[in-house]
Image (tube, rainbow, N blue to C red; front, side, top):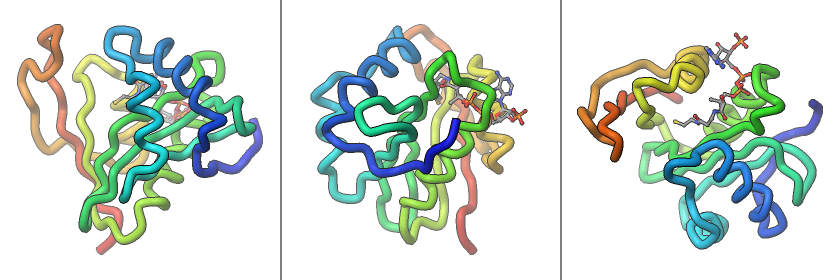
Length: 146
Ligand SMILES: CC(C)(COP(=O)(O)OP(=O)(O)OC[C@H]1O[C@@H](n2cnc3c(N)ncnc32)[C@H](O)[C@@H]1OP(=O)(O)O)[C@@H](O)C(=O)NCCC(=O)NCCS
């Protein structure tokens, strides 16, 4: 699939909400949460695909010299084609002066862990029973600059 990652817009929210619900069925973000990210100071909300029909998105917060990666998802029908890598690289590029990126990922999410490791993220800690179902979170970090 061609296309350059871009800033998400209000026209993308319906499709991003649908991706949320299919990719994070146990705890999806709500419409209000997504809309809040469009206008957040320091927020980075990127999408890939035509406006109104994104096939991938990522959300992060750029706080001082850190990027906090909050959400990333690719349409299930379009995975393993490099879109996850591209949208993550756009998120990092949109984080301005951030020197370090941080995120939490479920220990049992092999696809996401594989992608983050391929992008240079490394596990630096574990938050035990972090998720409501008791699954641990791995804390991953990547040096972006320096
Ligand atoms: C994680 C996710 C975004 C990856 O998207 P994707 O478009 O399939 O990823 P890419 O095609 O860019 O893959 C990049 C690399 O990640 C790794 N990877 C991706 N999927 C993988 C899988 N199922 N198993 C192992 N490694 C995987 C590979 O190293 C891959 O490189 P390769 O294809 O050259 O081998 C996607 O699986 C997804 O949306 N999952 C549900 C939402 C989610 O879990 N988000 C993360 C929450 S922390």
